[in-house]
Length: 324
Ligand code: F6P
Figure 1 (cartoon, protein in one colour):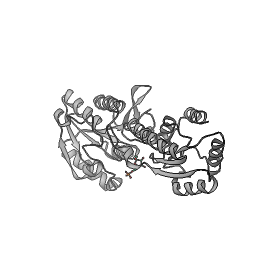
Figure 2: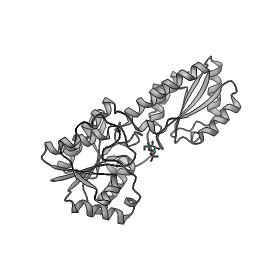
Figure 3: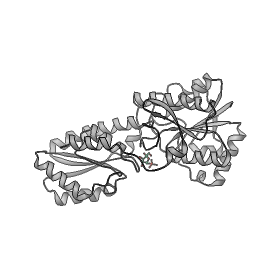
Figure 4: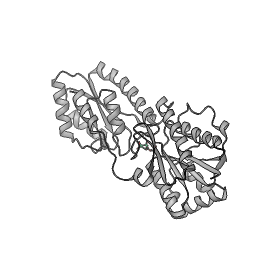
């Protein structure tokens, strides 16, 4: 291997820049050439490549977003699109690639490897933390801190006005952000797609806590939760059946994806970026580099993207007990 490419794809996540930096500098350390691919698979299909040296990635470890830009490519989902991408990679003399993204990015990489045998190593970069085989994804910790900070502020106004707030957080089909930020912010209830609570049980629980003396409430709702999918409808339902509270809805949205990466995300991204080049040099392909029990591990793409998201049952219990 002489020339490696690096790209970010799918939803951006804080720490992606730190991961790119680690890949580029690890290439320089090992005497490999490194190319950046702009705009994910879309840029790959169009041959939007640029050589990157160790100084090209200065002053980015602290920046959110991704300086290589990101995209969700429809064309790459077709065999013709992937063939074009493969041709552009070989035309540019690229021997192997590091892709930073989530399950969609890894699915594309896995298919590209199967169809054209192109060596690819992936780094989990998504705020959702919904990838198998890694305890954490790059960007998740920062997103959690953003959500907790936002809910702390909402709590001030909720308690001043005796209100109930439904706070919607991201996580496509995964409840990790909702559960962890919910526990961290002291939420009353947490609705996640992995565990269907149902409107009636939610209402009963809110009535119980009102009786127990609570004067305000925060309910964290994962965007993928069944009843949370219609958060305005849920708010109406609660208003109708729990008249003691004034009910408000806040959708946190894309602020969760931006901002300065936390120290944890920067260190994680740096370790995984170095791990990616080590893995390629050791002949690995079609794998993700993740973190498990604080050790850098190699996980086949197939395993990283299969099955349902696993949720921490112990933490659900902690949430139940601490919100009593
Ligand atoms: O996968 C990351 C994520 O932020 C999800 O939590 C969310 O559902 C989705 O991306 C939003 O995607 P977009 O920015 O393309 O609307």
